Image (cartoon, rainbow, N blue to C red; front, side, top):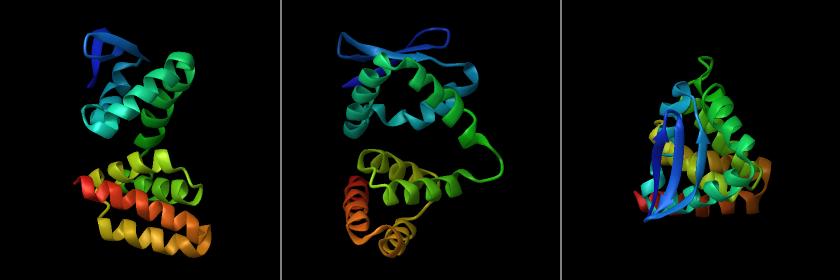
Length: 151
């Protein structure tokens, strides 16, 4: 099982058992809570797979990880104009329309945590079938069903 550890002030490391898998990068105290909230699924099976992929990707592209943590989740998701619930609906709709299966899975989980209901996700996917295409909606429905069955 992958685990995220704090290895110093604002430095986190991902490990698997006694083996170091990768450096999750430096994060400021301001984004630590956002990072932990968003990536808190690191102890679940899917979270383990995502954490492993993140550690591999962000070891090779650390600037990408820092931008994700500090700009996207530390700033954009924290802007007051939209609630996190609304941001989740927008993000799930966008990822559905763009056929971004891997990212969609995590954001459907996040949407449910942010108060979006399963029925709203079903309605969103059905609505998008007519705007983003039938195969895209069927793919999103499969992903949503997987997430729903986890709960």
